[in-house]
Amino acid sequence: MTRATLAGVGVAFAAAPLGCFVVWRRMAYFGDATAHAAILGVALSLTFQMSIFTGALAVALIMALTVTLLAGRGYAMDTLLGVLAHSALAFGLVAVSFLSGVRIDLMAYLFGDILAVSRADLAVIWGGAALVVALIAWRWSHLLTATLNEELAYASGFNPKREQLILTLSLAVTVAVAIKVVGVLLIAAMLIIPAAAARSLARSPESMALIAAAIGAISAVAGLRAAYIFDTPAGPSIVCVAAVLFLCLSLLGWQGRRRA
Amino acid sequence: MSLIHVDGLSVRYGSNTVLHHVNLTIEPGEIVTIVGPNGSGKTSLLRAIIGATAPSAGTVTRKPGLKIGYVPQKLHIDPTLPITVERFMRLTHPVPRQDCAAALEAAGVPDLLKRQMSQLSGGQFQRVLLAQALINRPEVLLLDEATQGLDQPGSAAFYRQIETVRRDTGCAILMISHELHVVMSASDRVVCLNGHVCCEGSPAVVASAPEYRALFGTGTGGALALYRHDHDHDHDHGSHSQDAAE
Image 1 (cartoon, each protein chain N blue to C red):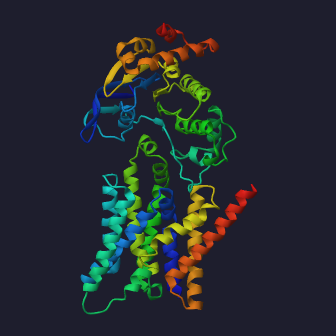
Image 2: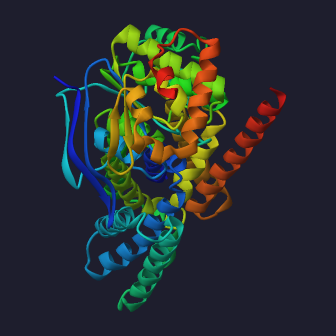
Image 3: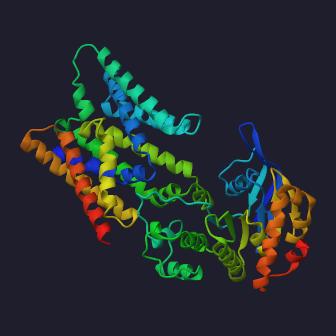
């Protein structure tokens, strides 16, 4: 139980600052697509007996880079993502069905299996999360400038495309480490919901990221507690708590604005 | 040495050549304006200068370590991104709060530090953008139709601000504009662009050039008439452009 909580909090910390950029840059569907593609990575790593983390990371990376490269070449972004995300998911599901021998509990990868997190998993999760947080903290002001205006970035002497690449890489790492915790179908929720919930409380980009991290961590702890008490699946329970927090904070913010 | 030197620049998007063999030099302290119809490659030229667009031929040389201030045509801030004016001022360079406040005061919008960017009016927003671009004391300021969305008095005031900036800081200014009359009065040099440089020179020379007249046709008459109208009320400007209207 302690390991599960630590794993959830680790993912929440990585997802919070990244989720803010996903929300600001309107990349929500991009996160979804990368996550869906990861199931193909899961299938591949089971076939070739690699670690799930490696396979998922590789496919998520390829997916993210493909989308970045193809963006703005004929198809609208959402069409492109819809094609890639769902075909990757479908190929992944089909590939899994070919695997003979051990029956794989697909549910564990679609919705996560946080209670089965091992000590080694925990190390991978915290290692990945630390990497993502460090990357984003290091590039923070450049990322923010590139998010606001591409030309402003060029004029200050750095390439916004490189910053975009850093976000893409971070996204792939986060997806790979979060599979065990919330599963591929709910990773996007861990990215977006805490960030969106933090919006109504925040007055600066930095405070939004910190509040999002807090909301994510609270969701992880409370969600796991609820899952234990009510015997519900852990990953979805975490997301449910985040969603309820989002609802409450949005209502509060809406009320505050109306009074002002 | 000149701040920016553009030599034989061509820019191509696919099979579409938007700029062809453009030469341009920006010297310290001068105000240069690029005018031209839609699709004439004005923004592409500016993007090539800051390095956002790679030339398909020719070179862009910036003075080593050149400090550039940039005011974008339009800056969209997503409603989900909370950011105060103060935080925005420190976006590209970490500067102390007093400097932010001083820069805003110089831009004519004091007391906005704690406001959210999303709460500003169009005029305030453009002035904050200008103040942000100036915060690092740039040697050259680039403006891409920076007065879009401002009304006539608003953009006139904005260009007066630009002249003040040049006078006080000696910063060179390269701007794109379609508001011919206002721009003409404030510029040292005008470059008329339409895929290539049609004509170039002092505002008076350009305004009387046949290439320029061919490009702007009747619009020119209207613009210069407006310009003359401005002069009935404001005697601070030089009079050389007025001659051009004769």
